[in-house]
Length: 426
Ligand code: AMX
Picture 1 (cartoon, helix red, strand yellow):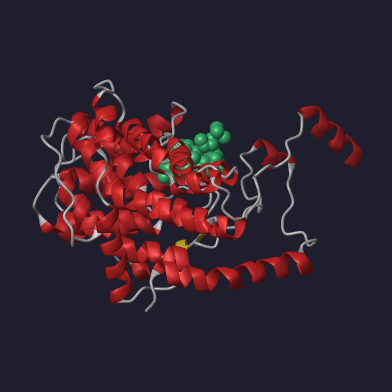
Picture 2 (spheres, rainbow, N blue to C red):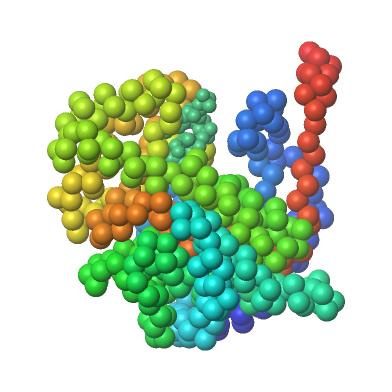
């Protein structure tokens, strides 16, 4: 099988022709309308973006290039990235070529560590991770090629170069942030020949338990993409549309992932579970959990890890991680509470009319499985989400650059304009 680069070089001309023809013949057709509620409501449900790497079905959840996530949960993250980007499942040789390529590009430069070491000790690990990405911007191959006048039709090639370098370095950067921020001792070097997920697990240095590497592979696969409209992907897309390079664009996306309604929900979820344990001990009853859930809702707070802007059923990513916990550590107290909350929370949220989705999302279980292995620093969890989500953001960016997608610029209107519009229609 051909390499990632060869497959893209073959696919891109055909994809360009296909989209050009579609826009030419059917460009005038209406695919979505916008109501006043949607204009004020985060554009929820407005179909104004295209993303071919993955799709989120409200009932089935994440579908990567036609494959429902749980059907492909045995893929390694690199296989997942290959699939996201090309729509093809790589054979052994193609994966090996990608892993070899990552090995060649690995190695976070020293200047990055110097910057991170100079940051205040209480910096949030997401801020450190993001800073590490931004300082590497000076190495962008795309920025250099653009400054030298590269042809538009070739833009995607240096973007792919930047993407592969970033992906090769992100596990090491993430693990280095973990060890520095939580004083875990010297950094552990990247091991050539080891796959991306196992390398990440090893560099974190949390445990030698082989099932931890299995978990990190799953983790890095499960969070990789969630179509185009989620905060991280959309932010990355918008910034990239200005022809900002992969470093600036991924950093922008991660700043959104760091918000409590998005990727930071996993840290808040675990914080909540630990607070429940402190109050009720290791074995809270369903009644106690139900009372606390209701109290939080009554206080106007969100139950972290529950609800979703698109999903209307249990997130398969939650299910996959729950199954992993049931298989490897069903009696772990934190994990047991997470499993119990799954029984208790949805019926309570389901009673509240305004909530569109009472079911758990990935963040409801993703912290507990890490906690089991001794990663108790829950502020850190979003960094692992970020390593994974970078794959989707970069895959989308490469495709968009190949299609020469124009700068993102929806039209905003004023409240007076909306009122006049509504009055005219009435
Ligand atoms: N607990 C309590 N209230 C909730 C809720 C929850 N888990 N989920 C939604 N609601 C509330 C909203 O706050 C909103 O209230 P408001 O009208 O008073 O502001 C109302 O229900 C309607 O919201 P919605 O249409 O159901 O959801 P949304 O599309 O506006 O928001 C999300 C989606 C994820 C931000 C929301 O469900 C939430 O805040 N969940 C908790 C945080 C979380 O788990 N985030 C992670 C999402 C997955 C991810 O990106 N990693």
